[in-house]
View 1: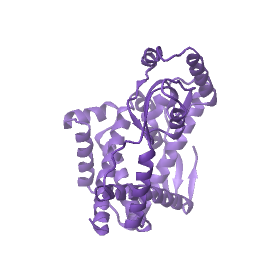
View 2 (view 1 turned 90 degrees about the horizontal axis):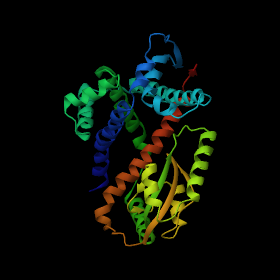
View 3 (view 1 turned 135 degrees about the horizontal axis):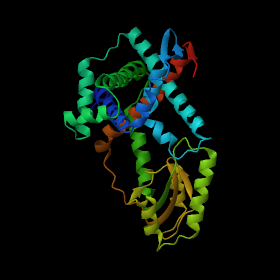
View 4 (view 1 turned 45 degrees about the vertical axis):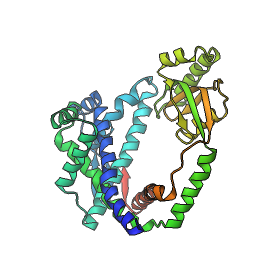
Length: 336
């Protein structure tokens, strides 16, 4: 496959596969919303403008709807003192997303980029099939979380529009050639030959990403106290009680760096100190370790997948630079 063919293939993939992934996220978000959306739509909430982007307004109701799927998760386990700050950080995060959405809408109008109803319906169909739901169950799941079909389709349209606009604007900034792909392949081969594989178990203490320093310290203290009484024989039963367990075989690179470093420091049979990860605190027991032995495909078999991966990575970086440029050149006034 030549470079032009690969570029064309990415263009389709960027609009279809990335869209499908984004839409899967939408379904997962709606599934998490529940009472958070209901409580955010109470009649005693007065509508107001919370931001303007150039000449367009963003309303409080939009922000509440966007944040609703995460509200209960953020509040869960928080004490009364931490709760307002958690909610504030959540709203700030989603207000930034709404501002970006508005910038994309404005740019799309200038570029004459549109999302057709068939684009939206195809994306929804992809999500439905990926989640193995028939049409009736799919829409029941959406509506049960407080979203109308109209609202859901509007969210889908926004995500497709973002993909279309950013792909058109930043694709020309990304230049990959066969030499770059070959160099990446050779680097992966070198790493694979010395890569380690781990078979760990873990005890897990969950923490939301918005956890305060006090909550993190308290969780680390619980983990340290538990670690003091752990041994190889009791580890599995304690892990099961705490919601952890056997993680199976993992390749080096599968875990975030801080967790991988903890495993690299262990010999089989050893237990780690508590280590903070993106979603909580872990205590690891390393059961087994292997070095090398990874099956390496030939370059001709791997090059197209490597090309697409490098292109996705480069596109994601350029898309963020593009959005940063839009923000920098816009008149944005937030009043949260």
